[in-house]
Length: 242
Image (cartoon, rainbow, N blue to C red):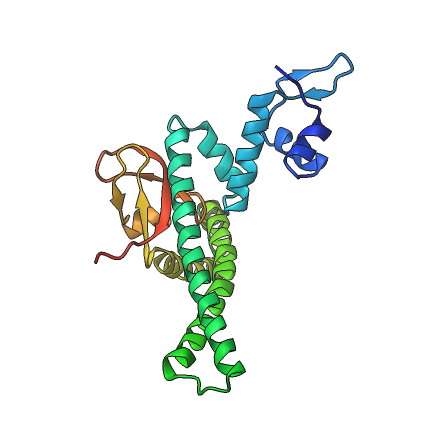
């Protein structure tokens, strides 16, 4: 089996050498062997794993979630669901882009022929602008979800410290922030549903379950209400029932 140095791995996956070393330090991708001089050596399996990590990073998973998912007993099933959802989103986006291209072409031809642009084309232009606005908002929401995850992970420690220190005014501020965090979780749940990797059940968690779960905007550590299996459940936009 061929072996690769850190530099070769970085070049094959189009990342920096420091990125490969960082993944090693975080326990995400350890080298399979070391040379006599102590250099990291990787094999084909390591290369595939790094490619997978890069793909998951590109679709929005945090490094902590990637590490946790890869360590799960159902990692293959979770990854399959994640990639299926990404394919669905990309196909939807491609269909929308194709529709926009066709609309733009019609508008160009109308202008070139000095024809009157019809009302439905004008509405189409407005729809395209709205889609762009939503895409921009989606990036902002990703940052919000990451911030919520950090906030939820630290609030119990902070609460215990405030009570022990008897800083009551700070406790009041904390409770106000906790309420705000709850509202953000409600906003995140709106229009989202979860897929269990064990039984493929699609469900919407309770507010309490979602509030105290860990993860990011792609996967959350939850118990499936159907099979009671605790694992990384994949988040997806709620599919409309026709």
